[in-house]
Image: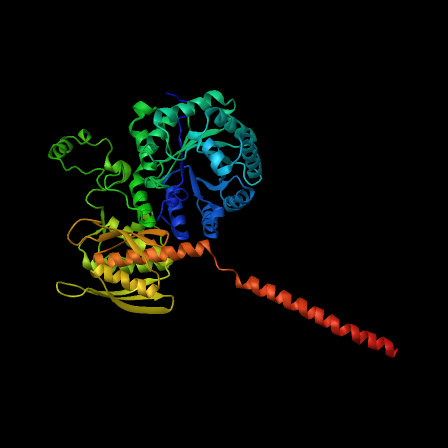
Length: 551
């Protein structure tokens, strides 16, 4: 086992690779909010997005760079000058900016995707790194699909990249193909065969297609890697990335095997941040998920329960408190007699900072919920705050819902929505109250969605617990996920579905921003001025000639 690196840098790519999970869309405000919580969690680097992808992504990366302090703020770019320049502009305001460029190096990518030879790949990588240094001195380079690249060529690329000025070299297992012994050996091979490798930091970015992302990342660290790229809840392309919470707790719990490795992550914030990311992305965390799943500290077997009662360590290798998990649904913090200041303080403690208008809305929802429930839990408050953040950027808002259903009746729903100053109302029938409500929303918005998944679970304990609905909806080729909660599960379903519609519209707007009217007006004005100028000249010339003739 190598002791080459003791302090392991945690590079979080939830806002970039994590958001690439199908359906895991985030709006501008949600990205910024998550970035602030990642900074509070103690990650070393936040990869905030892919600025060239859309104006919305650029603006989000730019605001994160301007407002989030502590971690390095990174943007991703292909080895293309336009990408790099746009990325450099986005991360420029950061205290500690980083520019991350990537280029595929494996034989299969060279042949079928890039159609370039080895020497062309080397040349492009070096040129792009040198160009990126015009915008930022902190450059990361990733040879995409490194785990399937010929080791000798990979070593050649890494050496050239460091010579060109890359400060971090990321070795990605892009398609999750490697196994731990193989991936660890690849990292060891690079340390043995790249002469200048100590001039940069070796990072790894592992995907979970075979369920080995965490194991591969840890194998890389054992063989000298100094940084791990990961995401909250393991979000990411296809089967996802290495899960940050699993990486950090594995190193903390198994120091006897992995060595004296440390990170800057505040582990007691892991569960709250996990819940926040899950709610904002609409990506549900499976109950048996390691570290942050609902069952992570649950014991149903009588033998296990007896052991935990006698000695916790018999069946728990991590204490719930270590990762910020509270038993029995959360900590009771407020009652209906609590004021706005108490609510704001409680939300701030959980990492949810609302502006004044949002706080007013959250307080109204809190009072309404407190009239229905005897006990308010932390998770109830998180749901209320999340809904206010979503509402702030919503196109449509649910104002009224009434359903009629029962044995021998036709389920019917009446829905009233607000869109800006307009109030829309309609009714529809369905197979059940939820189906009727969703069909009515389709009629009102003019957007037809196809429900792919509907999952319901209680957020807290008790018969009066809020029910959380998780939806996955297809709008043509677009798949959007969202969550919502209410003590009324039909209302929760309608809210979640409407949230999917709003996310779809927000995504489409960010990808196709409206053209500036002022620019068009200026262009028309210039053209008009040009035409007038020509006309004046045409009039003046005969007038002058006539005057000369008179003389």
